[in-house]
Length: 167
Image 1 (spheres, one colour):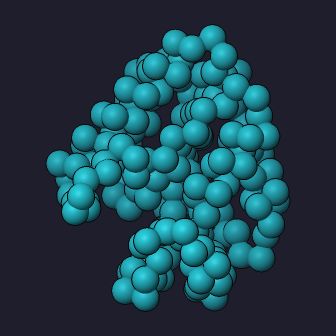
Image 2 (image 1 turned 180 degrees about the vertical axis):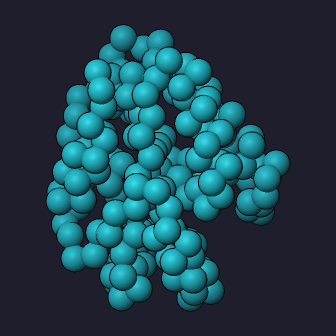
């Protein structure tokens, strides 16, 4: 089974692209990593990240057992390299092939997308500032792709192209 990990700052469009890909390819499951650490109030430390990794791997294991599932797309903000490595190692132990793609954009593009997202309670000015400050860090990650001025379809096609799996 193939697994696509979509990474990037808050508001970049990970969920939008992940659900678009899942809708485009039959038998694709979508996992939002935030669901896997949905604590109230939110706590984003090493302990809760470890828990989320374990939850994501558990879900992928179950999807792998399902005869209807061919691929999994995981959308999650992974700002620590150790999180990506541990997640990929866990996925590989399931005998699945994982590809990590980090989505980045210009500050202006991120602001535009942020302002257009009216459904997410995290879309505050404070969190926007944090997300913008994280753009440089995400831009330096392996497999980062700039999605500035691209449509959802163009981004999804670019992700799929970069995720050419060997099997």
